[in-house]
Length: 312
Length: 290
Image (cartoon, each protein chain N blue to C red):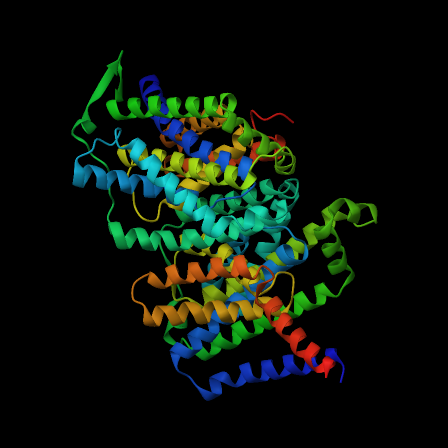
């Protein structure tokens, strides 16, 4: 059996298992845990496109997520189906990406990192002041709130994000992005339209982030504009991608599962905010000792086992 | 109206010199080590809290506690460098940037919790006996503490400039910032230079923290806010430009203080928008050479 077929079977099995989770258990705690994992898979994959494939450390991801969430939140009470609201949010994020893309990509290296961070802070400041009150879901929606519904929404969003990442990774665009990540000038000389490729990557990244934002406001009952633009959304995505494995497809999935597992585990056993101390520490250790992320660690072990068999 | 503008500008200058000082430390660390320390603001807060304790428990005047705070923060910086950053600092430059960003982000996740545990989540400010007094200059008033703080900031930036340009060790720091490979070839101990630079950077953060605790207030979560302010000023001024950072800080301080009159709570956006514009049209900063 080829490697490709094994991956395909694995992916189908994983989707089927995830799809039957709500049939097995409807405990809210368990479902919340899965929902958070799926949300972070979607966010991490969307960041992976711009950060992992194109190599642009975008610290303004919260702006895309937050804007998608905000627009979806405004459309939602108008009586349209929530899928329309989610798509509206995703498209709004795309529009934002097109507007900020051109000026932001003029920045290089450290300036790009800081510039995108500041951009997200501007959005947080403006929208946080513009909408000082918390948004709540419309009353009829709260009345028939169902966790299982939300679970499937997030499952679909996470699958879309992963699939999009996979398709981009093995497309001509993906090749161009990885070429410009390694050496921008060399990519340019080989005929890659660097500016256009970066912008397309940002648009895909924004669409997925906006979709995740739309799903999030459908899930959260009450939410503050300040919160959906919080830099934490960016940092969590970045952390997950780096911990899992930058620029790989499975990496962000492993990273998200690990991240949520660790976070929920420590919240359970250590009261107060102390889980963050241990979490930060583990995170620092991973960056220092496993710079390729967990995926590289797993690959390393896999190779060792294979070498052993080959020797026999 | 003019009175209000001038008075606001005076307040802006006192906050602005602090923005400048915070930025000088961050700029030093980035310029020399090519390491982005997003936990920088956390050490500003730490410095303020230490001074708060020194005043509360030992009745040491905040301004006299500055050398003590600086030494403590230098030690903290050296330990942090040896434990978590030494590894990163021997990497290639683009990897350094990414990994240091992640490591210091991990650090900035931890510190607010530690601060909350030690100093509680209450808003703290450092209030010596003279904190309410002010001096009159013509029709305008400037607080005694803001005035002292401006002078302290100037002295520290001046001393740092002197250290970098005149002493043997300072020159080795400048050489390392220009090319660490070249510095290593001519026999400079790059690792030790990094250690001391990081220590000095954090000491400056701590000193700024003392005066921020005096003029504004401290909570465990304001660290990120100060990191962001420092980053903005550093980029405005251009990397590795000490006096430029101070002037850019003052400009930002005045812009915000005057902006509050016209824009209310949106004032902090001015600085940010201003910053993005500069970034786009003068990526080398206001005072940087292209």
